[in-house]
Length: 140
Image 1: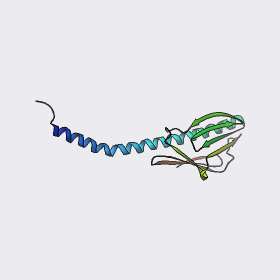
Image 2: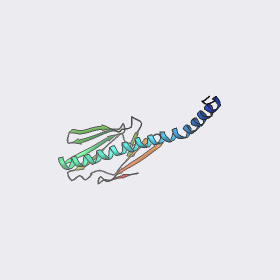
Image 3: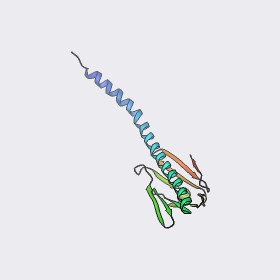
Image 4: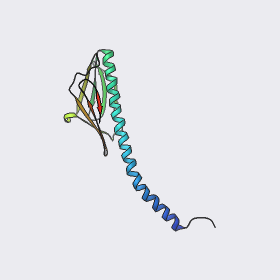
């Protein structure tokens, strides 16, 4: 007769349950980290796109809001609009507790603003972007 006893099956399921308690929190943290990094790189890409638009059009600005909206404006028109990815789980915090910020660039692609710090948080994972007044980006 082939097969497993009830005791063997119970022991196997107990071992699997114990192992999964170690894996599930790690997978959740990994998911939070990937959401934060994806959102950060989306903002960096929008920043680079804004600089390109500024060189092409003579001036452009990147608008960010605490609710996750990303917008590139050239003059009075919007050329790009997006939101911070991450299924709404990523919170964006702008420097000095502001709700909105504008990061303008001149026709040479040089920023004409004070330094800006943006913090992104999802679950226990967090990262920061520090944008210098010349438009350089430092990831932390």
